[in-house]
Image (cartoon, rainbow, N blue to C red; front, side, top):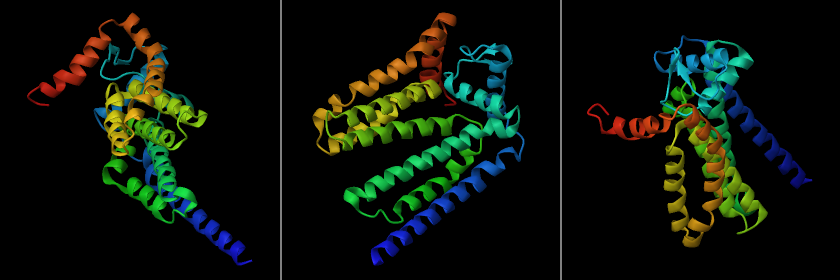
Length: 268
């Protein structure tokens, strides 16, 4: 009887925590989305490019005011265009992908914290809730999450890449579970690349390779890397080829101008 009461008490506490997190997210991120005008130039850019995709029917080459726009790959514009198609051409629809991306990133942080602090069947306690609240209440996360830019979306895909790889590293080596998580990591990495480019490959490597080295799993650095890398390439390849066939100058401009010249300029 006492055990049953304890289980019910823990369930009520967890339900209360979930309600607090959900309420905080809805009040802080979802409700304010349509309350202010779009900020020039970033938000208007990420509203207009998807609008022109819908109006012109060209889902391969991004355009801004009718001009080819090669600053970013295409997936972020696809996501914003989908929001516009679902909710109409309004400020709420333009900003919604950023807010949802923050919410999904927070969910991943909660799941990761539960896994880490609840290892071997232990009760994770308040740590997962606290970690999630800290993330959601960070000033920059809040500011970017209420703004129509690609950073929150990119952050979610990177978080998904790293989380999936972590779960793969906890699975039995060579098992189907490990391979499934590695495939998920590659899928998330591929869509991150289609959102913001080559940083999608750099950030997970800088996080995950030292993690495996720290655990002295030197062979796994190579054994576990080929499947997500191959998956990410396969996910990225169709649009990468399509944009090259349509606009042969895209990759030269995107790689050289956006990744090298802009950081070597005097006003970088």
